[in-house]
Amino acid sequence: MEKLSQNDIEKNLLNYSEWYYQDNALHAEFEFDNFKDCFSAMSRIAFECEALNHHPNWSNVYNVLNISLSTHDANGVTAKDFELVKAIEAIVEPEED
Image 1 (cartoon, rainbow, N blue to C red):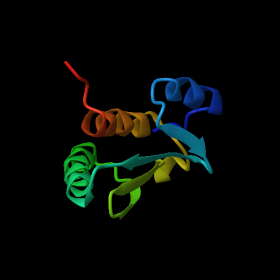
Image 2: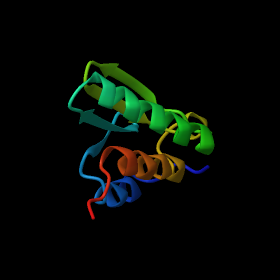
Image 3: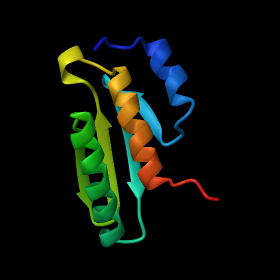
Image 4: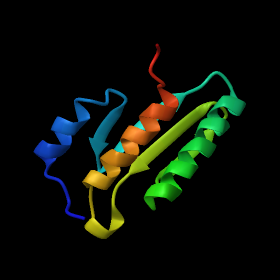
């Protein structure tokens, strides 16, 4: 997987307001109503990570989830990271009907 240019990363980030690029990775912080909701989202995200065979660096403190994504083999951000961002967004920010 090929590392994306900073310009490509910035263009892709226009679609994801919660995410930013820093230190060669994509980062986001999500706050939930409580620990149970946060952990539930993490569990659903974990299934997506396994399906994509791409795993984030993440941490959870009570109702806050911090996620950092980069493709270690490419030493930076790739299309694979944005594929996971899209999946994460669908879980933490479901579209309203």
